[in-house]
Amino acid sequence: MNTANTSPFQAQDTQVVPESHTSHEGTAHRPINIHVGQFDQQPENAKKKAAQQVKISTENVHVYYGETEAIKGIDLNIYQNEVIAFIGPSGCGKSTFLRTLNRMNDTIDSCRVTGKVTLDQQDIYDPNLDVVLLRAQVGMVFQKPNPFPKSIFDNVAYGPKLHGLARDKYDLEEIVENSLRKAGLWDEVKDRLTQSGTGLSGGQQQRLCIARTIAVSPEVILMDEPCSALDPIATAKIEELISELSDQYTIAIVTHSMQQAARVSDRTAYFHLGDLIEVNSTEKVFTQPDHQLTEAYITGRFG
Ligand SMILES: Nc1ncnc2c1ncn2[C@@H]1O[C@H](COP(=O)(O)OP(=O)(O)OP(=O)(O)O)[C@@H](O)[C@H]1O
Ligand SMILES: [Mg+2]
Image (cartoon, rainbow, N blue to C red; front, side, top):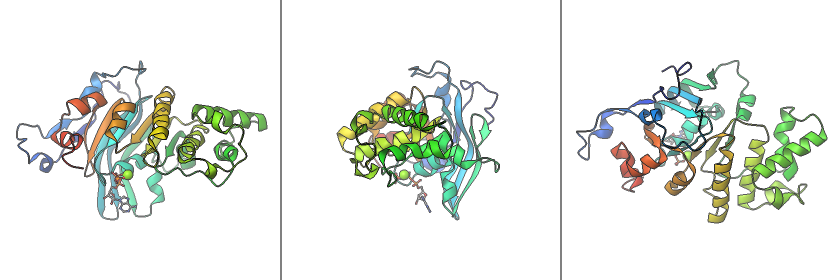
């Protein structure tokens, strides 16, 4: 599939679902070939997505850990300014697939990625590509908040310094303040910027990590279960933040909380054993899923 010169509304994310997935629970009437992106042609959630453009595209992406195939050929378009949630049972490949989108899998020795991933139609696996720059453009927030053992200020200033984004000290201060404001943390930390980032609460640390990601002006933010270590109040803050950030950034979030996916995402992608089974508007996935595997998962029959 080459989406480079195609309208996003024409592009389809085609996923061939192996027969074994449809061979039980009386699904003989179900087609085996499912065009999981068929609803891309009629985006239901028009929120702020006036001019949807493909931001990231994956084409026939396979990921192997040694001999084991963890991702089995995934085609997916992620549109600019959308929030897309990745859901599915533990071990189905959500994190592995998320990491292919900014080449974080490169850091795992046994891991091999094949297929094509583009950001703004540029191949991110091009050997000449600057991976450090890519990871600034496609930032990542992890499950467990991981601030550097540095001051709050330096946590946020680190990336802009590394990438030479600030002209001078004042410019750097402005970037730090703006990033902390966008991450909804400024008011809580403005009087303690020199204190260690690791001294913040878990929820504050996660917002600090989001500020650190924002500080290098990313275009896409990948989040791997960003709230799983947080209490409900801190979770609500992050979810609110995700909605605000989606005005400016494209966000892909892995979550085990279906309520969270329903609250924050425009579209939801359901993964199963390394396959992308279905991707549709979040409302559709949770009310009228196309595939019985999705339905079984969202109704709690497995996973
Ligand atoms: N570093 C690794 N080395 C070898 N195998 C791995 C590695 N990381 C993941 N895997 C395997 O790849 C498959 C997908 O794992 P992945 O972590 O992507 O799943 P997940 O959907 O994110 O699960 P969870 O919901 O539990 O986080 C699993 O079978 C897992 O055991
Ligand atoms: Mg995971």
